Amino acid sequence: MENTYLQQVLQVLNKAEWRDFGDFVASPYFNKNEKFVRFYQFLQPFYPKFDITGSTKEQLYIHATLADKYSDAGYRNLCSDLLVLVQEFLAQESLNAGNTIKESLINRTLILRGVLDLAERNVKKAETMVAKSEFDFQEKLMSAIWINDLRVLHSIYNNRKSINASNPIMLEDNTHKFISEWALLRIFSALMNNLKATKSYNLPLDKKKYETYLNLYEALQPFEHKETKIVYLICKMNVWNDEAAYFECFEIIKSLDFTRNIKTNENLIIGLLDFVDFKMNEDEKWRKELFAVYDIKLSNRLWNEKKMLSYASLFNAVHNSLQLNNIAYAENILKKHIVDVSPKIESTINNLCWAWIHFFKGDYNKAHEHLVDVETENMMVKYEMRSLQCLIYLQKKEWDLLNAGLESFRQFIAYNKPHINDYVSHQFSLFCKNITLIAKLHPDYLKKDIEKIAAQLSTEKNSYMRNWMLEKINSGK
Figure 1 (spheres, rainbow, N blue to C red):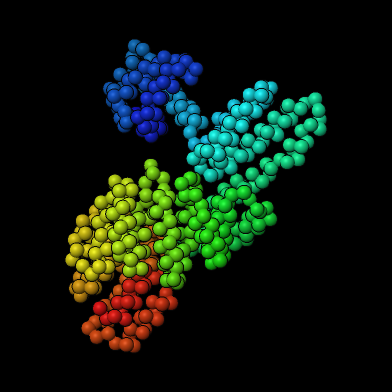
Figure 2: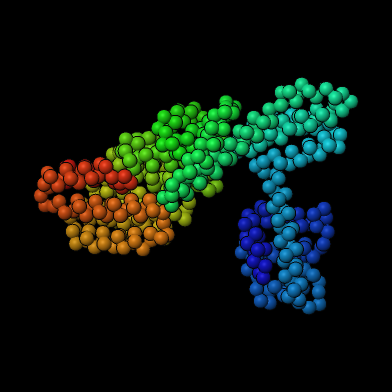
């Protein structure tokens, strides 16, 4: 289609939405021009790609406009006008799902027009509906804001003849608390994204910026919801490297109702994982915490079922449990949750995880077989594949292949360094360096060499497969 914006937006409509869009276009309230009804009907066979070029677009234009001949400018205008209708349709759809914007608009209009009894009844119904709903946590807070606001407005309109009659309800008005809680949640969420990006680029942290809002939370607390305190603690622990804040936060998270607010709970878990992952690279004792957090995520299915479980979450949970020598757990969660990963990457992650499992079980041939079956263009999966391949060569004492694999891996890391964050490049560069040192210990593991490498591994930050390497050099196997 000439209007690529139109094609892009039409392609995001699922079958039900495409059908409902037909009803929308056919409604005289939303569209009074029959040419768009004919336009929609002509497009039916082209769903869902809407690839219309050449003579087809000329047929479309003549069919929709009933014109005698094709006009290129007219066709472009036709597409632009339909694009407006599609966007209006999406706006209507968004008013009917996942939010209470529609109820807010309706009842504010009723109050301003003096239909006070109906507005009062509607607001009570809306409050009950929100309490029982599966709305996102922040949407529930936003609902509390407009419901409280409309109650005050209703009281003012209902008591116009008595200036002081609305004072009691305004005296108890908690709008400031609702708005503060909602705003701080949004602010902490944005700050955590900023923090992650700052660390990714290895930039200095502007702690004063974070401190301002952490202090604001402390000045305004307590808030009604546990989730708000959790978000505050997650920001605090990540900014100040505060271990006490983590353990306090973890205890609160364990008390949440995981059957509700899945999106919110998933985001909270992600915040914990960021902190624990950072800590674990400094101290292996945090690996058990990482295991515990992933276990909460998996056992409570804390992910959007439509988007499915992220491949990284499943792989990291498997990989981490293997490094704790909990092989049975790794096998169980892989078998149970591989179907929850997107079909596009399911086979890739399944083979990669089984390759690592067989490696930790000591079956290096089986590990290699699964590794060969991994097909991917995913950058992080390629890093994991190359790491495991080097470890397999090391364990099988295939020194020439190991040297070639390490050299290839170093070149891969250098080539991709501009396209990936410094943390990843540094982590796998250290891995190559440490595997090279360990390989040089054969055939006799000298005590002084072992102690030197062990000391280096123990103090190294961002050390990948640290525990396995320490066990390897200490056991000599």
